[in-house]
Length: 232
Ligand SMILES: [Zn+2]
Image (cartoon, rainbow, N blue to C red; front, side, top):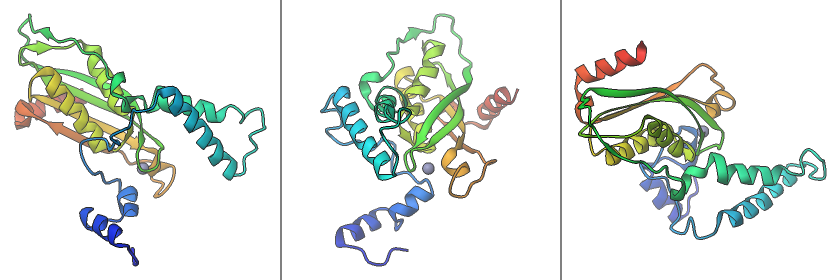
């Protein structure tokens, strides 16, 4: 419980439904569909970002008392910076969004298409430690189809951001609905959060499941059909 708050903090506190920033992080709450980015998030180049991150990460390591003259640690700040921008957080930058070509559904396949067990690695935005999981993505064509590998690429793009699982689920679903021009999209994510297993409550067995059912997937029969395929 927070006792002394400034007016600004009080206003924020009310806006956040009386949750403190601590509560939000600890309970893995999230604040909206859009990844919270600054307006000028991409005003500097990736090269400049990597230089800054390397400098700042070196500071963190130094504060922790690590000897940056050690041969093994020397290159770590640059490695972390490169990994952040080019790999694990590359999905923050819209320029890295996969290019998706839409095709006409020539074969008139009008049943559900499911891409299951898409393995992804993301990172929790509250602790910056990994979220490891599987995404199952399905859609019913409204006349347009995309390449199967693109479903995988869309999952990977949104996973490569600081994330919370609910947002990841909904961002994938919203993008697929836009691309495929249909509401009939389903996304189910089953993931393990290392901030839950390796620290905090240290629960190594729990998994978090989130789902999105749109359009025709809102009917119990379609949900059943989907879940049957996933469980086979
Ligand atoms: Zn976390």
